[in-house]
Image 1 (cartoon, rainbow, N blue to C red):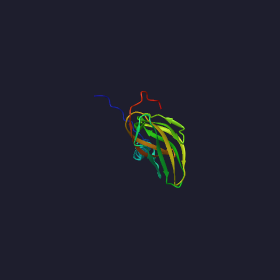
Image 2 (image 1 turned 135 degrees about the horizontal axis):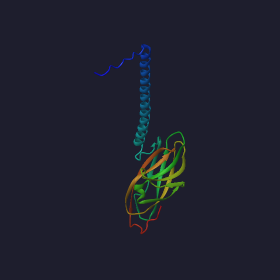
Image 3 (image 1 turned 90 degrees about the vertical axis):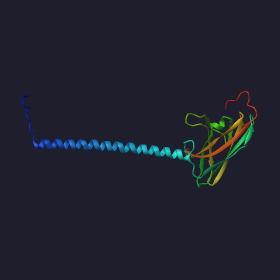
Image 4 (image 1 turned 45 degrees about the horizontal axis):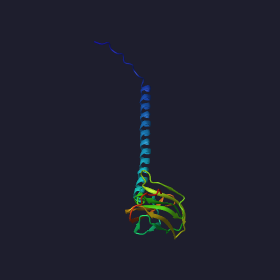
Length: 197
């Protein structure tokens, strides 16, 4: 038979303090966990809402629909390879405040058969499509007065035969976007060398 282990009596006061301390630590851990979960859930919800707003607003997933701003596109339905032609964008502002056009973005699906040579007003800078954004961006600065419209012209050239279609996005006030669609046929023979643009 093993030797008996002496039992140490803990005074009631010390036992009460130990229980209270344990409860306090448990409550602190619980509130800390709840707080972390709340903060994480809040930011995840904010992120989901932001993405939803972007997805619902614009086919590219970039920007929100420009309130009170529209774009109407006029272009020939068919051009020959090597032919220079004009695409006209009529941008209308129906609000009582001035709007600022920041860029004209042309879908890569259009750029495959049509190149933009220049714009009026003049393009400040261009950027090529990149992963996740299949548009060629033309940075521009144009003001549209309240309850008014302005015209932007793109001087273009047909490059290779085929049917080409895609969107032209007009970005307004930095992040809002108005979208128009364009389909164009390029006929004839492709040039021996396609110029870089």
